[in-house]
Length: 420
Image (cartoon, rainbow, N blue to C red; front, side):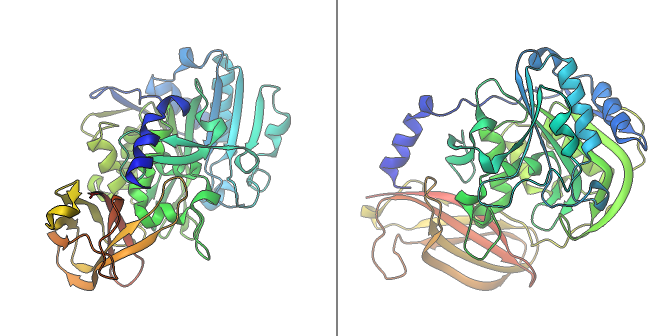
């Protein structure tokens, strides 16, 4: 996106759907835990125990519940959200006086939502106020990402960003080969419209991966904040999730007002270190939730943590920072790109361009080929030239740093503003 177009985009806030602020204030994080062999009962216990179910804010409004139905598989495989967990949330919303309850999943450019194969067919005749919504049939909106990490605007399903909507993420307790875990915040990543972020011959939403999946996860939650979070851990998944790991039965459901707090409580249950998930660290740094569980109180049923086998993930590369930023081509001075690696690994770096309104990554300049690098803070310089040796046009670019240990690649990006 060129700088002038970007400034026009920011000035057009009033024409885009209004986002909401996350509800929990620092120090008031409560997460409810429900333990039962009955998924419906466990969910009711968890939601009740947290003491923050937003019943008053639901009356008369549309409630959208997004489960994780990434694959046409039953919840006992550890892949998808248990429909009885969702049914409990639906009933709570109806009891609170919701005008309409939408159970929404799927996306433009991929096969229809997996409601039937995942056991959700009964909702089609459940209650006149309850509707299954396949995002692939819905219009999309380019929504401003306030203070985003890698996007200034993202394409989301238009019904998910309508004003006054109460949006509830009902995720799955899973490990993840790209994001370490897939919980309530990662579940919301499924709102990014696949057709807008597809890369030929690669996975849907791959543009979001190539900019940095952890940054993209946070940006989706900034554009469409989560009003309430539930995590289905009745059957979770360990190992190389979200699709090919091993199912593990836990009979637990977690729930709460703040998605970061709920996800961190889930990580404690899974025995995954609190500093292992970059998207939660980024979210905490933005004031979206706690940096660890010291400020989180878990209420309700007592839980015995279950150590999940982690996924095989690429080494973490933290979001690079450009100094100075903006940089002026007329000065002839280079910009320094600082980045941090979590462990010794191979690192490569590039300057790329990618238009938010027409996503499609283009490599502008290769800064470093794959090079063995230790753990720590490093820097590279860019002189404002492209791979042909010519000065780039003024505009917005991304410094992209990539990491690998031979299996899988991690990505992180930071904006560089180039002036004439």
